[in-house]
Length: 420
Image (cartoon, rainbow, N blue to C red; front, side):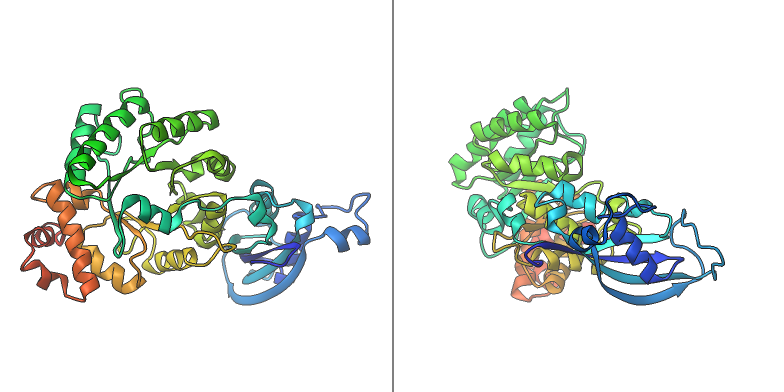
């Protein structure tokens, strides 16, 4: 991580000014300066507490701006310069606090008229943050222990339709999936505590089904209950899940914020499944927002045990290269604590196992398939088996189509999903 008393932030910027001028504006605006000199802004103050420009790397020059709103200087030559800028922020200015850190390294930067593009692409934090935040409590190893899954990915699904099922329908589905040997089931991000199926009734029904199957098979499926809500609501709902023997809770990270996640982590006794829905608005424009490399660092620090990263060849816009970078970032140690588990979802089926394993080179992940399991031609049980068979083939180095010749569930998955 970063130096003892400073936060190091790296940005991709585009500006109609020189990169040097833009970098100085960034440093001043987010530490000791504003648009005009003010009383008390002494050279000594700037020296001690001003953000410093550490490095500037020029990349390219463009004829038009990436984003609207920039105000070029008088006599502008019509060129927009892109580059990478690295700044150092004194920890003294905000302390080991994620909300106040973001006010410094992001804050008003995105609104400055000197920029036609700005993206936070990397962040290094001093060790003081490790003492202020707990990080993942369970991570990969703890989740595997609770789920009883080792030596392969954790295979999961999402309750569909997205808005949820009746309590009776949900109970029946969970029992069917657990009997099929599914490791992990999660609520959709659209379904938490709706009036037609209150979480209290959902938790009771789901855990009765899970325990019923566990008594029969000796294996307890992990169910991630969506407890996203206001601060006091999340605490009540966590206690509800724990009281009924649940082994996972889920939250929408951008709905509750990093401070909400850190608060949940303080009392949480279960793995926290972090869903990143809404992340697209922070990152989809290549010259705006932040890289997942930064986002996952803050989410892990605040306590997420699992983090969604989309998936290869998914239904979403994100490129495979971006997903690969996301998984790689999550493998980097964070102050020596537990590693969070990458969660691959979106457009997953038995057909995606082999390219995923070949490309990512790891099975320390959750592979979650909604339609890829629930829409299997032979039903959900066959869908679960097909996912496991797809990963068996991948890890054995056997072409999936060859493996499918002796595994009918995988064969049916090929016939179904190859057409999608």
